Length: 400
Ligand SMILES: *Cc1c(COP(=O)(O)O)cnc(C)c1O
Image (cartoon, rainbow, N blue to C red; front, side):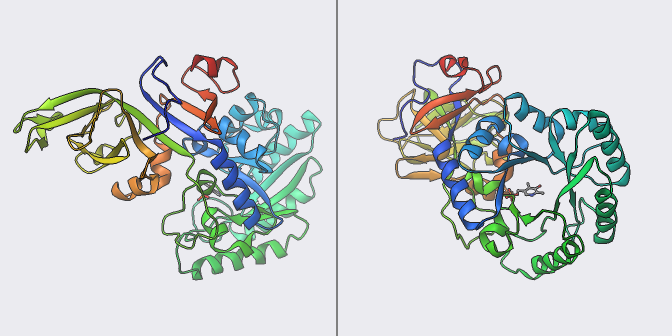
């Protein structure tokens, strides 16, 4: 039976919540950091920390030993600063021109991708009277974002001579880090190190996401950038688990209505499921509007009283139905585990990703903002992030 009542029966509100196990997160940060040897660890908390709640997860990662945080855009950095997080924050993605003053005010570390951007940032830094740290991304074969080695070397050289800028980091990102065949990764790594050798004065060189850190810890260089591993998932295809990671997120709901259904009746839109026997159907308050993919209609399963039960009929925006006929003593109010453990049963984000033809990342990122995040330590709720309460607010726990 699932752990009772992080969201007890006395709680107000719709019975659907995500439990974020901060002890598991801390364990993962420590495990990944020890794999990285002496390298710094930047916890990647983009996309609301892969659905886990950026502020709560970011804070916990720093407490567990992460040296800095990494995000994709300025606004994600701003959210962390507004919550009072002081650690360095690397903005790894594309930043348009015009964001320079905001970057400086928020003390973010952007990835500079053009001479224009470097000039604008340098001018804004002079105006503010600061030296602005920046990183340069080298595109070594992902062919997505970053500068080709010759351009990266040229821009780095230009930045070196600008007193208001400091080129703190040089990095690249791998195309195939989660595959067993490491030949392309080695090619990219060689292109990166050849570039870095031309710029030996840059203090932080970094290449590793979770998959590469797990498989090739010898490439940790000065800093590693794990994301999914912090949240306890192994990257797609990564079977060589050199670290034991613990899933951080559980998504839970309750059976809010239990309906006996005569044989021959159908369930949900489109009448895609028909009862072949007299059945008991549990109504669950979670749908695709919460992040439960609609392709799980008649395919996915849920856990009730530690048992797997099939999702029957179409998943709707706000609700879904499960056939709970075979669950002894099933009752209205029973907890339903959509992702996570319940007794002997477990459904992982990886499993759901595979069923949906995607990866755990997309399942986790897809958990909607209206699903409250409860932050747990030793099984106790110590904070909550909801549509209306930020984790910084004392009120968040009481409100829960
Ligand atoms: C998202 C991202 C990461 C983290 O990747 P994981 O596979 O989640 O570990 C690292 N580096 C960059 C540039 C990223 O965009």
